[in-house]
Structure formats: structure tokens, C-alpha cells
Length: 187
Image (cartoon, rainbow, N blue to C red; front, side, top):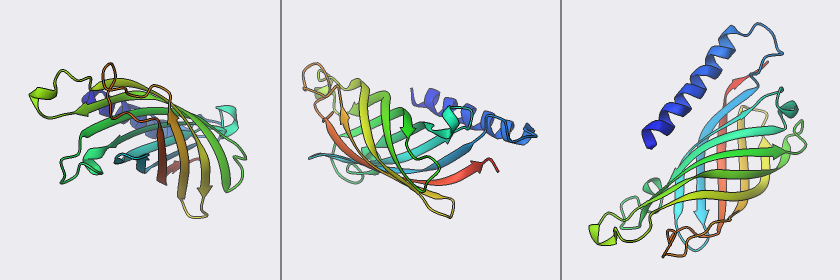
């Protein structure tokens, strides 16, 4: 699963780079591609850190709709050098950004993805450790005059875990901060 996701992300980024090199005009699909880190905290549970990408194009509602991919894990957060449960989140996040021409932009997103918890010991194999993610979040994005952007948001998982049919560590409320650097930007 991880290999397929990494290959998909590399294919998308390669396609965008190829489009950037072959496009001779400003009316192409390429808008802006940002990459960076995402820090996420589940309320009353774990810190999860990882990587995130954000893409916006003038051909998709005049750059108001952003498409995001992210991977966050406790392996880079609470589970690093501890015995906390190792869990991974793979997310696709289409979002709508209001006031897209301004530096401060409110946004709302829908997050779709996959959750996996690694309990490490065979005794826990009877517990559910996988789930599809479906959540919403909203927040503020600030674009600095340098090629740096920060997103701050709060979200709610609509399919939380109950421990018997879904993973028990999938809590409803989370907070996130993403720090992006502009990799490609249409001039």
C-alpha cells in the first residue's frame, strides 16, 4: 500500500514537472505546487508528523480549489523512541480556499484516506487496525511574501474508532499545522 502511494505521488509530481517544462504559455494547467511538513495532534492522544503536498491551478475554479496529498504518522511523532502505537494516515484532501488572492485565506477541506495501526505483537491481531478515513477540517492559510505558506486548522473524523469494529485509536477531533515551500509556481 505504501509503495503504491509513493509511486502515485512521484508520478503526479513528475507529470507536473514535465508540464512545467513543456508549457510555453501561462494558460496551462500548472499553477502552484507546494511541499512541506504536516504536524497533527489528535485531541487527548498522539502527535503525528509527516509530509504534505498542495496543488492549485488557475484552470480549477481560478485556483480556489486546492488538491492535497499527505502522509502523517506517529512513527515521526509520539511513537518515536516510545512504546506508543505506530499508526499511519494517507490522505487526499480537496479543499476550497476563500479570498484566494489575499495573503490570509480561510479554507474548508474534505479529507479522504486510509488509516493503519501497527500493534506490533501477535496477541493484538484480533483487534481491528485498518479503516478508511473520512473527515472535514477548516482553518486559515497564510502566504508569506517569501515562498512559504502556513495552514492552521481543526478537523473532525466522521468515522471514529470504537475498538471492536474500527481501530480504537481513531479519535474524532484533530488539529493540524502544515508548513509549505513553493516548489513550482506559474509566473
